Length: 234
Ligand SMILES: C[S@@+](CC[C@H](N)C(=O)[O-])C[C@H]1O[C@@H](n2cnc3c(N)ncnc32)[C@H](O)[C@@H]1O
Image (tube, rainbow, N blue to C red; front, side, top):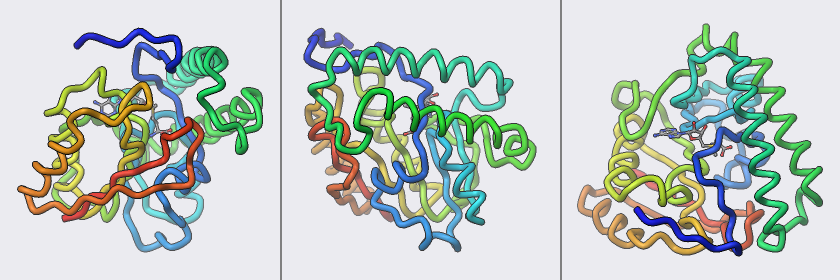
């Protein structure tokens, strides 16, 4: 697939191993985590986010899944640090595309990412043993049907649609709804802050499978205009 070259847009060039905090997940997914004590939640892709660590501490049954899980903690932390520098560098080059009300500055953003990474790092080894962190790669996940009540999928589908084709997106959503009755996917926009060109086709194909889909505006609006999630249920 030909990639757009435009210095007015964030250019990462690869899917980064980059993770957010629970408070950011609440914003991205319109979630009040205190209402989810009885739920079993899958975070996929989890990356080096602290959602699993923080939600587990709150007594929530939560599993994180990522293709890189299972590797040694040091390797993951090094990769996350390298990708953090890449993202901060690229964001600094196009900082006008971002709304800084929440993080205030790239240093503020760095503090959030480093805190997420510290929490991830301190939970990861115990979490691997307890099977709260599992290796898995969309569009096929290593879980039985109806294993979860909610799947959260942040910053992979749509956002990296330069890297993944239409069928990857459709099959990944069908897979999320095989293992759970509900999935929330953030954001809905493709790269370059533009709508993903297959979005309407996707909604049409999901409807044919009797899947309900709703686009919901959320409070997470760091990248200007990137403030919508897709809620799908069966
Ligand atoms: C930008 S991180 C998002 C992490 C987290 N959801 C967040 O929003 O902070 C993207 C993650 O997707 C993972 N990834 C890449 N390809 C994947 C695939 N086919 N299935 C699941 N995860 C994948 C990467 O390893 C990386 O950790």
